[in-house]
Image 1 (cartoon, protein in one colour):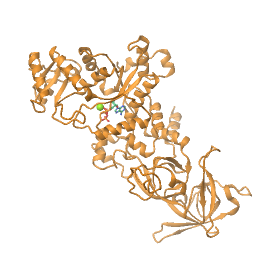
Image 2: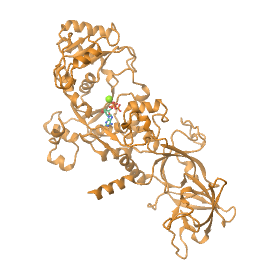
Image 3: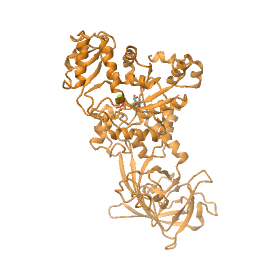
Length: 587
Ligand code: ATP
Ligand code: MG
């Protein structure tokens, strides 16, 4: 089915309900009873890296369809390539899918579980003259293949007797030949307009250790030979993959047609997710990890599920994002700001509000009674009267955000400046009088007075103050490491440079020594909060004092910093809303 055909799959009801084309195809199958109304999908990751946000799109699609149709979705590791696969990846992939909120129940499979059956089916093709052992070199095979405009040439081995091919294939399996000595190919058509149908490779010799089958095999099936047959064995009805497999579909179908498989699944292709400011290929992500550009697969700047989790993304935000981008048959690149928008929406609804100062400067209240401490009962929600409160201490020495002071402020500056009055959130009005500087000219202290009548943020004379800023009490504040993230790359399309690592943004991580209010020292690693006015922050899961040192149960975090670490998940500024607004104005 090509793009034009795909529009023909929508029934009138589907079109009016706005279902995607994959579900429309399934509905059509269900109407005519292709699979007796059964819907069974699978998510087939290759365990050669961590899952990324593109995989999330596929997971949400496959598991989401199973949920919608009361069907099932299998997790199948596509582990046909022995050299690149590792157990670490198998484990992380399962953790990430579960974290996203999906469950394969008892249906965890490995393509390698089917090696014996696949081998027997390959022998079956050889016996029936539908496959042969080819002894051309890799280079000769390329030459013989032809081009998209010229047909290929038959290999001289193509018409060797089936018994000879069978004997050689068995000896391939027995380990009689070195890597690359020969391959098993399907005998289809060297002049086929689709190059994938020009006698494609089915088995290659590879003397390599496999993470599950060990040294039992020295021949491995190709993706094309393994995938559709694995789908058939598992009773998959709709085998959903990305567009690059569209021109493999004739081969997928040819194999199912020519093998005695128990069942014939349907392959459906959709467009993969690309994101601006991001690289998504596992090969490139692996390079970032191996060459130390990032702090592992779960670095909060990585587009991996584990990186997003550590950054403070929630499963709901990711699932919501996948819903918003939809499913189509046309490749496109989605704005990173849409992903951030989804997170902001989710955290706005759930993250409690606290105060943290990310770039502190001291503020001294010169008329505050020496040694006095006042506690404010502050709500963690701006809107919910039932929300939790926590005690916030106020004293004569505070920290405020350095950017909240300006020496020569314009008229519309509603924050600190000489002679200007602002409201300190939850507490008092203060008027700034002067800034004290050190020898280098850097401000070390802002000297202010407070109005004792303004407790709680109003004055008896009803004086209006436009600006409200956040603060923490210096003597009570908890020092914290604040990690401010920007995009990992310095341009929207990092792939436009020859080596994408040259496009790494040197300011993608800025570490500040900040201060947070005492209550924030108590929140758990992985919890998300809003720092008022500054953005959403997530307490880091890996770094910071261990739970044991905080008086809790031991955990496995490394605890290599003695301060809590907060990752900025996303700022409060809403670029996506701005883009939407601009788009509307353009229309
Ligand atoms: P990569 O190009 O990152 O190495 P891959 O396709 O080789 O990805 P797999 O582990 O084979 O990675 O992918 C598992 C499933 O996820 C496949 O069905 C694949 O089509 C799908 N998938 C991978 N990348 C994306 C993406 N960017 N958008 C949507 N689906 C994706
Ligand atoms: Mg793949």
